[in-house]
Length: 98
Image (cartoon, rainbow, N blue to C red; front, side, top):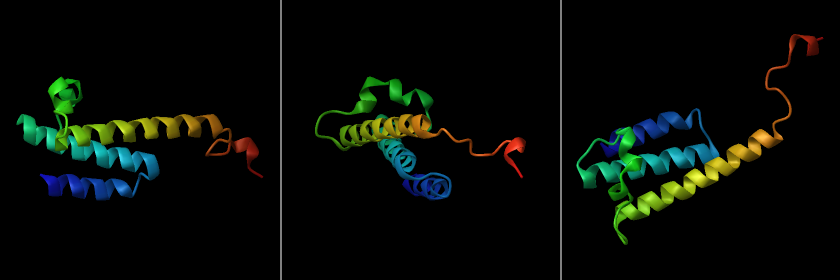
């Protein structure tokens, strides 16, 4: 299971960078540990809603959860900064072409 998540992360690296990639890796790590501890599937979308998925203090699950939360906050902050600074369209309109 760990190997498959690692492979998925490598494939995602082709499309993501920086904060997005950090969050994807942290999320995959947390999901894998939560699935192992809670005996469920790592792709369970309701996993984040389970209080026990946060882990007990001083456990690997709690550490993985806290890293995931920090990575999510960094990703959100980077996304807000990008949208605020992204004044130019990525694809120019036909009127902009010469």
